[in-house]
Image 1 (cartoon, rainbow, N blue to C red):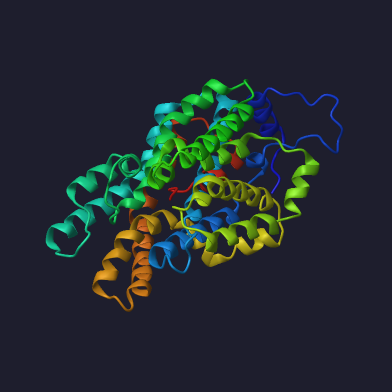
Image 2 (tube, rainbow, N blue to C red):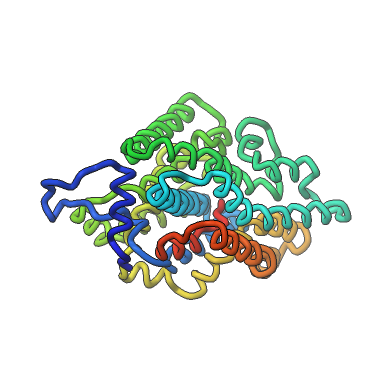
Length: 388
């Protein structure tokens, strides 16, 4: 998966403002993981697994109480991919075209969300089913404010509650290009690392002081840590020996994530304090592992998982309202029918809503902007609608 080394090395040097003089070959940092090459199907496979465990925890929380970690997997991947692309743009042009970035993200994320919100609102007007989103709920989700509504108020968790994670990511997208531009040449990995530690410490303090679980779990200030971990990974240049150590021990993050899947709900003190950090770090470790060809990357490149990863944004958007509706209509077979319906809706959303806007985004980028290096374009295609 190695690409031309000149661009990624220069990109990372400009951002980190570090020198390699006098560093022995066995400890010399390699280019940032993000800059190492082309499209990685294993990252889509990770996304496919993540959306499955999120759907599972909402369908049967008693079977898989720790399925909330799927959201953190999405968060890490989003921070990793977005920051890598922004860093590449900074290295190439010395600046980030912030308005174009906002427009590009909107083309990727907004159409499918609006379509889902419109469909649910129309359904709620003609349906007597319980727990259907109201006009107020639709407005909160539309404005990307669900995380604040859940964290700071006694807000009902209905079929749009899952849009809290979309809100966290959108708020990150709003501020991150500006902050990263300010950090260029100022050792951003140190600043990001400090922010990660501060976020974790703040979350521990809130839990220790008796803050409500919803305040800790849904808050932007408390749950942005996994996104920052992904951002840090996109910029850091790991020493060769340390990187080989991580790649040689994939069982550590895999076991950690598997234990968490069955260990605790997202309302437990352990999950709110240590759990979010462990999920973020374990996901980052896995990204390093699958940056090379090995058994782990091959397993995560399994065709159906990759396909689920590609439609994961639509799958995530539709899963909760459809599952809740299914529980009220078909109690016995609701989960199986609902999940199949979600996959069908996600496939339709990807083909007829997301894909056309992705083509429009690609057309605008190629016609109005100098071409970026090929490996940056291939990784751009891997950006998720993101999730949660």
